[in-house]
Image (cartoon, rainbow, N blue to C red; front, side):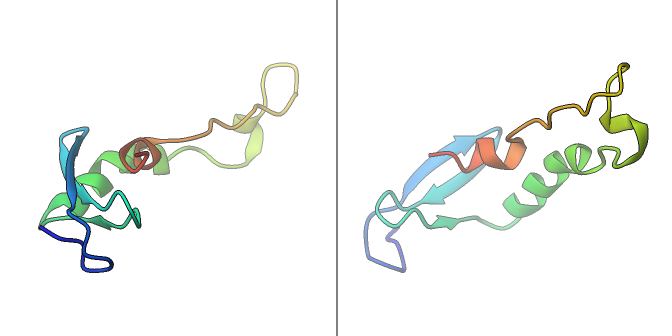
Length: 78
C-alpha cells in the first residue's frame, strides 16, 4: 500500500499486538478498523492515575517526578 500523502510504500509494524502502517518518509500513521480501539483500551489504565492531593508527593513531602512516556509513545516511536 502506498502513502496517500507522498506515495512512498508504507511499512507495517507490530507494536504491542497492534499492526500499524506508517510512512518512513512523512511519518504518517494509518490504522485499520479496530486498531485505534485496541490502543485506547491499552492506554486506559495509565489515564486513570491519581491527580493532585498528597498522591503526587513522597513520604517526606517532596514532589515526585512524573514518569515520561507511556503506551502510546511506545507504539508510535519509530
